[in-house]
Image (tube, rainbow, N blue to C red; front, side, top):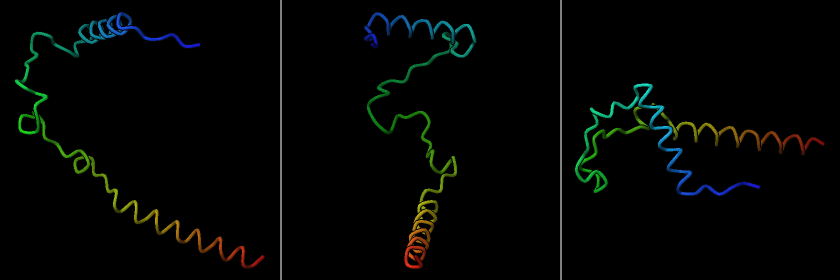
Length: 84
């Protein structure tokens, strides 16, 4: 049976992870700068990156290739069943 995660447990876990990150030098607390109204909308985003383009993901080409393979597989299956 699983135990429920309470607010106190969650806070403890987050603070432990924060301490680990500070010790590792991942989060230099002194250098952190806040952005005014960061959750307000699109104009004030710090890094506007198109991740799909940046990572070179070619989803449309992969979908076409998968559809082509699916059609060929269906035709082969049809021929095999017809031959039995």
